[in-house]
Image (cartoon, rainbow, N blue to C red; front, side, top):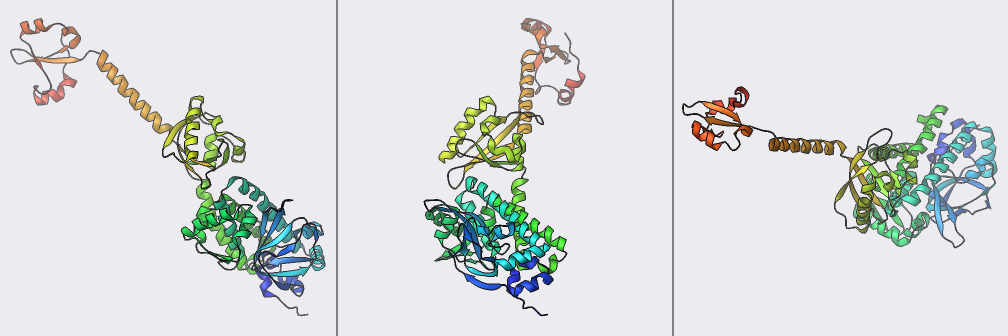
Amino acid sequence: MNYPIVEGARQNRILAGMPMSRYAPLSSHLKPVELSSGQVIFEADGPLDFVYFPTTCTASMVSQTQDGDSSELAMIGRDGMLGVPLALGSQTMKHRVMVQCGGQAYRMPAPVFLEELGRSVELQQLALAYVQALIMQMSQNIVCIGHHSVSERLCYWLLMNHDALPGDQLRVTHEMIANMLGVRRESVTQALGKLQAEGWVTSGRGKIGICDADGLAQGVCECYALVSRENQKLFDRLLDSFGHASQGVTAAVASSSVDGMRLQKYQDAYDFAPVGFVSLDAHCRIVQTNLAGAIMLGVQRSQTQAHDFLDFLSAQDRSVFTAFHQEVLSGKCRRHCELSLHGTERRSEMILRIEATLDEEGQECQLVLIDVTQERREAEQTLERERQQQEMLARQPYMLWFKDPQGHLISANSRLLENGDGLLNEAGLEKLDAHSMPWLFANAAPMSASPKA
């Protein structure tokens, strides 16, 4: 029996991951639909009559307050599906689902999806893998909202949508983005202006163009790389287990893989930098840190946010850093400071050179920690040697040179000759300095001559 094949639907990662033998019977139940920006697909506690597989559009799971304020919980594009609760045994959607960037999706009746879910192991595993990816994205978004600037979050939002769409144009308004990020529209407009000044995006009426995705990757927080990488790993492992990843994965998967590798470089540069990166809030509490920073502080990276940075400093340096921190927050600081960190079980006390700057929102103090312990200890050792030499010259006797009437050179201990000018005159000894001594002898004398009384 022949089945009609809706090839456009295979742009969706879940549908692309199904073996053709399982996908073909379902294709007749897939209907292409055009979705517009701002369109509500599901209401909270509403029924799930259909499942949608986006191909050229993106949508958001949105949480709303009683006052009408909204915030995005997760973004869904061509790597996922709208109607996830059906895969978990629920018949209703718990959050509103709204289209972000308009485009096309493929709609399937819920009873057909549930029937296939019951007999297709591949669809079960693909759907559950996406549930896991969605949960991971939602949990990371919570961290992102609390700890990253509007500009960083905007780059994250733009890149996530760019990865999920086939082109470089996002059909979305500033108001829509502000609602998704949970910030004022003016903040989005201001942040977009900075990105546009860098040449990374263009902004027009109802649309945003991505001109330089690599540029946006320089301004994004680490959340984007983490979400992209883990999402890619989930589906790669699953498709490899099906044994048809190379045939079944479409341009959506390939695009996501390239973007993941690009952002992997950014993540590695941050995580494995030889210096520590630490961000502090206005109260000196640690917001985030890279691996080097966590190692310097002697704590697990996942536990750094529970600490006050001052707790790691020696007592005499806390007031110094507090003043330095306030200078940075005021925007006046153009210098650095050097402080000592407490020793840990794995290392002794460490001396740090701390450079600092203020984030774009003026809320966080971003530190660069450079270990200068060895450099400072070597400098201290050099100063100590010089001090000892000066002390030796001041306290220890040294030699003087004389020439007798016959022209012989005589050396004598200076202490023996204190107040002995009369004796020297009677003996007819002439006091010499290095310039009046015979040249070759002057060079050799310190090694060959022996003191005489």
